[in-house]
Length: 221
Image (cartoon, helix red, strand yellow):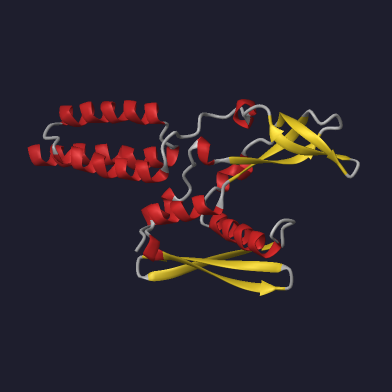
């Protein structure tokens, strides 16, 4: 079963290489397109598996005409909690696309990938082609991330950061003085900076060092 702390981790950012970009609008001369960031449904499944465990989440679907509703449930403690959202048929593989989109939208209700909605939508150089008298996007000729002015996204996955939290807890058990804790905190801080840990995981890690310091102070009193 998942804990409330696990649910907070669902909000964490994805590594940059997990983010894809689709073109929304192409300029009149076809040299640029507006880029929108998105994640694949499989990335959402991997996030759920790594954070709450494959046995602690489930999804089901209802169909109403062209609209598909996804009910995404996570077992938090002893209770199954469900959040839902829907999507219409897509232009390609309509029903399959609607299921995928509905699933991802329901996942956003849980915080997965929600931050992507606040990312800028830059105009990125691209290659286009003409079809039906209109210019259509073919491929990007530059990395859309080069046109996003935001802090670096993490280079490690949520699963790796979660394992890092477990390592911190084990390392803290070997700290028998406050000086040891401070040294460990500095070491892990450098590692988090190097690997690009997200703020969510940093906010969970930091109190662990403080708790160990308090414990050692009580033992010494």
